[in-house]
Amino acid sequence: MRAAISEAELEPDLFTVEAAALAAARRMHADGHASGEAQRRVLGELIVHYERLMRETRRLIGRSDRAERDMHLLNRQLQTLAGQLEYRATHDPLTGALNRGAVIDHASRCLAQGDMALIVLDIDLFKQVNDDFGHPAGDGVIQAVVDCLKELLGQETAIGRVGGEEFSVVWPTSSRDDAAAIAQRICDTVGRQRHAAPITRAITVSVGLSWNRAGTAFETAYSHADQALYQAKREGRNCVRQWLES
Ligand SMILES: Nc1nc2c(ncn2[C@@H]2O[C@H](COP(=O)(O)OP(=O)(O)OP(=O)(O)O)[C@@H](O)[C@H]2O)c(=O)[nH]1
Image 1 (cartoon, rainbow, N blue to C red):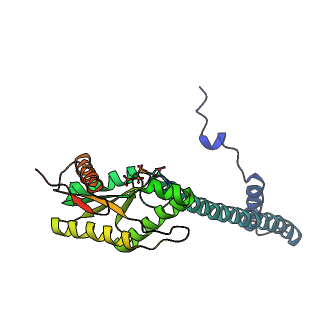
Image 2 (cartoon, protein in one colour):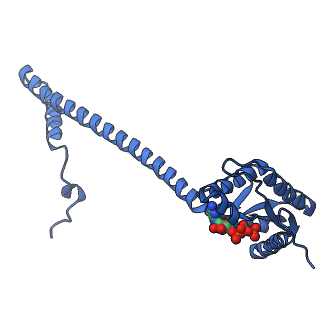
Image 3 (tube, helix red, strand yellow):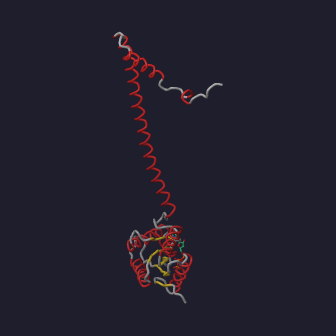
């Protein structure tokens, strides 16, 4: 029976010519009586193949360096793209504030870890702002309110735009007084803000606050803050109301 064919027999030898030149050189080296002419011929063959191998090796190294650089570049572009996609998926395009989904995620994580205030604010009589000054000016007001919140609360604070002219602030704190104080500062600071032309009047916000123990569900925290916000609207706007257990 015929013996199994070895892998080496199946694989074509990439270096047949070079191997032959090497074998000839070996034989020449072992033969102490070869003529000088025969030695020069075998050495010449060896030089030709050796130089070709060096050229090819350099070319392959260059190609693999380029491929590695291309891969690094591609990797960086992918990371940038992933960052941009992540940003777009979690932020409001007009203001750069967190979008509703991102606020829910963030607030839910905070509530799982500790006590937290949820502050919701809504621009007062905003329809009138749009009607009097135009929709683009209204957009400018929305942006200005978010900028004001960022400046007041810091870039690290989770500030969200959860509706057209409604915003939320996630404020982890174990102190109900601290939560009430920050809600009042928000109301006062936004109300004092000056707006660019064509806006010619003060823009105020109504603020609802719920202070929540760790473990509270986001829906509960939001519903309580929302009820407080509508109380603030009912009771004259430009004020803060806190949800209190009855
Ligand atoms: N410019 C602009 N307007 C928006 C945007 N989203 C919602 N609005 C407008 O915001 C206005 C909200 O009006 P309402 O809900 O009636 O409330 P309001 O006039 O602010 O009155 P109160 O909330 O009761 O103080 C509507 O006219 C919407 O068209 C937006 O992205 N840009």
